[in-house]
Length: 174
Ligand SMILES: [Ca+2]
Ligand SMILES: [Ca+2]
View 1 (cartoon, rainbow, N blue to C red):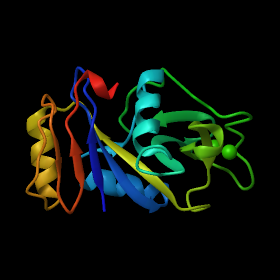
View 2 (view 1 turned 60 degrees about the vertical axis):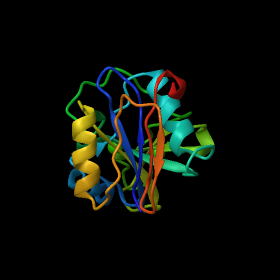
View 3 (view 1 turned 30 degrees about the vertical axis):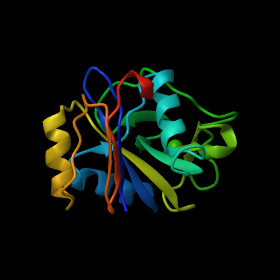
């Protein structure tokens, strides 16, 4: 089941934790949520996503993000269309190994450092993100996937239901 976390930023970005699978399946699921796989813009965002969804958070050992060079080898594009301003490649990555690796995930063995992989090499959890986003969009999207619960991204309370957990964060989430 998809699980939602919010991160307090200037744009009140919301993130979803997606079930393990291929990168393309994860991006398709993200788009059904009105999002894309996540764009990582800074060390702070990297750290928040990894601590929230990674081994110390929701438990994903690896985590798809919205970066790919599937169109042109070595030209890495965010699904959001934003420019690539921050990277966190693991040692020796990206190496486009074996028959070609074009899909990027944060990797537990690299402490969240980025790894390029083939789409279906291993099942990897994903993190989706809506940007830019206000509390109203968060609510509408949560409702659209069948939950009565919603979150105000400017709030300071935690709400949970059987489908997913919503954490409305302030600066304490940073
Ligand atoms: Ca590649
Ligand atoms: Ca690789």
